[in-house]
Length: 156
Image (cartoon, rainbow, N blue to C red; front, top):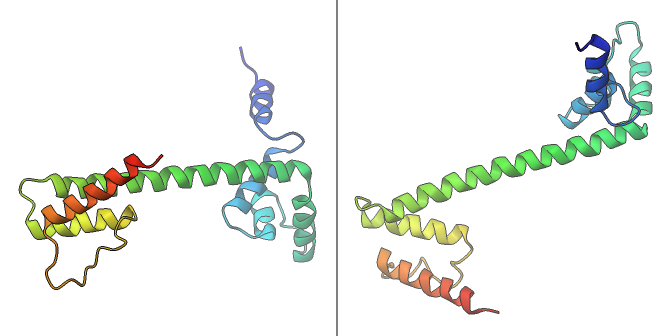
C-alpha cells in the first residue's frame, strides 16, 4: 500500500534538484508572464510580509540554481508546446487550401486565390506579378508553380 509520504516523495522526485513544490510554482508563474513579486505572492503566503520584503525574496529566489533549472525546463516545454500548436494551425491551413484547390466544385477564381495564397505561404511567388494586365488562370498558375517545384527536385 502506498502511503502519503510515498506520494509526496514521488511528486518531489519530478522537481528539479533542491526545490520545493512552492518554489516550482513560483517558476511556473514566472514562465506564465507574472512578475517575480507577483509569482512569489502566488506561490507563498505573503500576508504578513511588506511589499519590499516580497520583492527582495523573489529576487533572491530567482538566483537559486534550482529555480534557474526549473525556469529553463519550463521555458523549453512552453516553447515546444507553442511550436506544436503552431504546426497544427499551419497543417489546418494547408489542408483547407488544398481542399479548395482540389475541389471539383471550387469556382476558378477561388482556385486562383487559393493557389496564390499557397504559393505565397511557400515563398514561391517571386517573379510572378499580380499586376499583369491578364491575370493568370488557375491552370496557368498551377503549371508555373509545378515548374518551380520541379526546379527544387533537380537541385543537388
